[in-house]
Image (cartoon, rainbow, N blue to C red):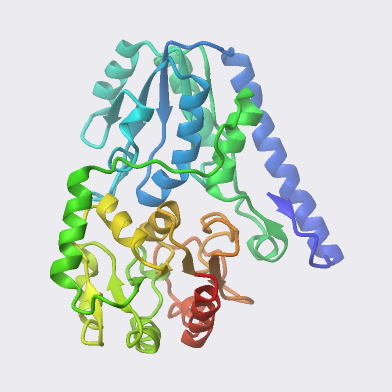
Length: 388
């Protein structure tokens, strides 16, 4: 995190920011002390464990870092330890990462603590790299450090750190610029272990020939207007607070559906939302019909994607399709934004009093989302289409 140079800071905000950065540095210094005390660097580890949990967005943002780890240790055996957490049915890293970057995956969703611990001890890893999630705190980091040191008995490990501090959130929302999750994870490799970044934000996926054939056939069978180019729409999101109003999406689709095929991307759970807008011209729902990788191939066929802050938004830019992304104010800005270039646009409301609530459900009528009007998104789409 860093302070924005573009906004003048008042005296009270300076005091708050000074305390914020003091806590940020202090917590990470404590973590670094334990890492340096307990673990030694291993320049040529035979067996590496990469620990990364989460769903589509978490997985995609970790792919560049994992590719860099493989490039730094091309002859090492690499295992991935992953989980989607308490929410069942989500897509984990094993469904997203190309097998050329790992040897095996340990998904502990269905394993007890004792079973998992037995597996990790038996595998005798020389190096553990914990690509921690955003929001991981000091206690959880220290807990995992002690676990891998004294329970798993690993001699070399790194990756832990505090990325956000949950005080003075309004001040942070106004003045602090955060690294994207992709950048943060790559920086961990460089700053904590001195690894080389061979690739910054490139992505590799396990695409099969069957996936390609399936998508070609799906387009042939579904899309009636063959001559039109395609625009993708992502109407769903895991959190209700991240969903732009479906009536707003409807207005945007009305603007473009006479000139473009509109393809709605999502899971089965998004069918209810999709069904409320597929009556519009040249509008088709692929919700629940494709795997995440197949969804990426669909997005690759589209000129651009208009999306909530959710997994397919990350799939879109990772597969090379520009994104007009619509973000709520529930989380800190920049963390999950698409790459900052001329081909991606981000919409996020300003001056929202309840910003950075970190809540799973909004209790203020999704004010930060309803404040983003369809005409703003339509304008961004037209601006983007000029370059495509």
